[in-house]
Image 1 (cartoon, protein in one colour):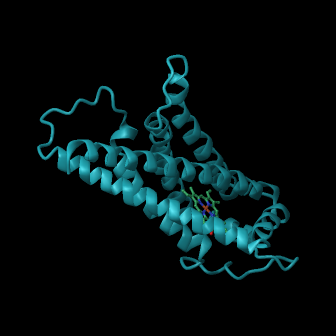
Image 2 (cartoon, helix red, strand yellow):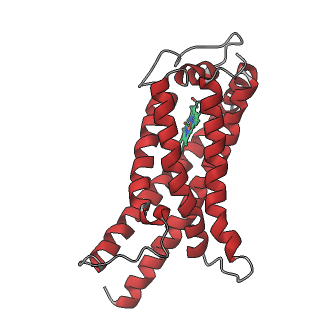
Image 3 (cartoon, protein in one colour):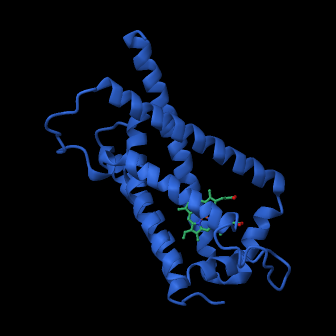
Length: 225
Ligand code: HEM
């Protein structure tokens, strides 16, 4: 491929990875905020889940959109990583790690581990295939008992450990991903560069702390049932 068209393809792939990544980060923020309602008890949380299920067209369109964005993000990110490796067949003799953070150097690793966590999470809490004990359970108002499912899950130390490990990987991936995406999309301003750089770690901290509050509040028995 001529150099200019190779450069253009790589740039458009990078922009697509950045935009899809920001979309997925947005989902993770809203998912965490929605899940925080578990702290208010079964009424609020099952009501929230029932509200989403009452609009099947909207729900399935959102699910399909999320899946498409995730597939695009993963496929292009793998393609870019392979292309980078091919463009640099001989590994650097001495790696210069002064500029790159740990999070930026481990994007492929944290991305792969995050994908494993998400597959596990869907089989566990969404499909009920890992633990089906509360999957078809209804609350006293006849709504799906998603609250019971989450409480049951995080009373088990093994799931608490797995979900906390998932948060570590999510936090590392997000902390570089958000700032890196803003940079790829050309967010560049002398006065604001520190803000763009801090955006990733800030979003990562917000999401991870919110999720850890949910997991640990349930585990420690602090949630009203
Ligand atoms: C403490 C952390 C979390 C809790 C308590 C939680 C809870 C849940 C529950 C209960 C469901 C099933 C909803 C239902 O059956 O109606 C679900 C679905 C889902 N979760 Fe999570 N989640 C957490 C973290 C995450 C994270 C970190 C991600 C992504 C990185 C994620 C991605 C998803 C996705 C993609 C779905 C499927 C959505 C759908 O089917 O509409 N979750 N989550």
